[in-house]
Structures are given as C-alpha cells and as structure tokens.
Image (cartoon, rainbow, N blue to C red):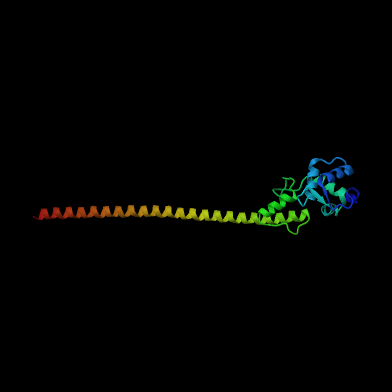
Length: 189
C-alpha cells in the first residue's frame, strides 16, 4: 500500500525518493536506521529500490514493524562475534561470498544471503583451522626430528668419547705390559 501511494505502478525507484517517502510517513529516521533499511532493500547495488525488494522487506509484519525492527537492531551482525555489530550491505556480502568462492545466485532475500555467507565462512574457518593444525603438527614433527638428531649426536659423541677412552686405556695397558716385559728381560739378563 505504501509503495503504490508514493510511487504508483513504478517497478523501481531511486533510494532518495524512498527515503523521503519513509520520512514523510514515519517522521525522522536516524542515519543508522536508514543505512540498515537501504542495505536490506538495495539488493541490486544500483542505488535503486525495486518493488520486489520492498515487498520482501515488508511482507512478514508490514512496513511499520520492519522499520521498528531496523530501529531496534540498529545493525545487522557482522558475523565477527556476538557483540560486534555493523551494517553489511548486500553488495559487501555478495563480494565476500565471491571472494570466498561462493555465490549468492538464487538468493533473493537478505537472510538467505546472510545464511549462505555464514555457511561459506564456517567452511573456510574450518579449512583454516585444519591447515593450522596440520602446520602445527608438521612443526611438532620437525621439532621431534630435530630433538632426535640432537640426542643422536649427543649419544654418538658419548660413544666416541667412550671409544677413545677405551683405546687410551688399552694403549696405556700395552705400554705398561711392554715396560714390565722389558724390565723382566733386563732382570733375567
């Protein structure tokens, strides 16, 4: 009803016209609320609002309730944490989806794009965690190999020192035996 009262049979209207009509109908709307409403309605990222987008926004509880909810929410979650909120436009969500290798094709409502973005983000976060775990595992394995090499080197050094000590002891014993044999020969002569 609001759409047809303000824009007749137009299928698409520029955002400033929609903004003016909203403020005429509901009074002052703060910039944050307007930014949220625009982010919800501007699915085509062309600064125009289509009647289809408007109908989707208002279909559940009507325009007044949709604006009230936007005022209460003041923002949509950024998905970065439960307490951090910021406006994420449809364009930004679609760009992020594309950057993550996803697509919003077939998603016409903001909630569908948000849900798909959350799924794609979750898959990427899981893949990142797996890669991080693999990297940590590889680093731990390399550390174990390094530690084993250090222990082997230390063990080899101890064994070499023991071999050298035994060789020195055997040499000392041979020299002592030779000296004793020489003394015995001298006594016998």
